[in-house]
Image 1: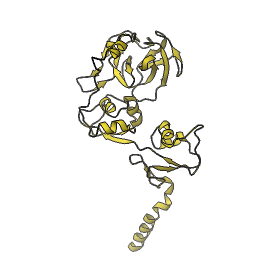
Image 2: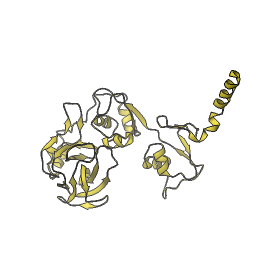
Image 3: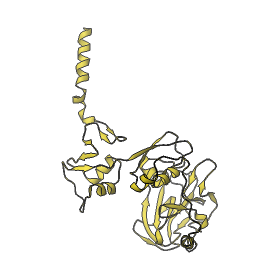
Image 4: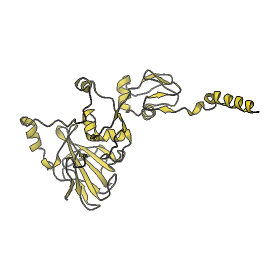
Length: 291
């Protein structure tokens, strides 16, 4: 009887692949499916697939898929078509590193890293956590070969008169009045703030710091709650986070001083406040020097 039980267990184990074939697990770190549909960075399109579903499956952007495969409008793909999947890099968080310093090194943004890794508190990442990093540019690969945990944002050249004039003539105004709870830069706790956090009462109106065009409205980025991004002339960008209400939408043009939302405590904050950032392209700038 004992021998019969052993034979039965052996048969069950040998048939496991057949019985549970529909429940294969995707290994997102290696980006290789257990059923072998992705090999050598290639994925065979199945019936019902589209660029959006594939981008979600392998945690990459639709733009990366389009660019890597040179897909043209109307951006259609077909069953059995072989698509190249750009593999993402990974980075293990070391002692003293912040999401900001890591984003600077890989030439990406805190927003992108938080979204890729579903990080709710961007100011608190655990040592040893493995982060998914969007594919780096060839330019950075040539410049940097080894990770340096002390990597810091490049300081602007003080002798660059043109850049100094742009800063002086930027004309930004305070989006809301209040006490600055958290200043720009590295804190005593080792956290890095890309902007400033301004204390204010819930519902207080938030205005656009400069005229521009709304390029993002939403709450998909963990930790920031309701967020608005506005692009201004000369590649300036402002960010307004933790909003209670949003009074504009993506694609809308706003004028300087226009009400765009109200102060709240959405996202990873307890008290009502506004997280405000000013960026020159990808680089963050201390708002207190421009307001």
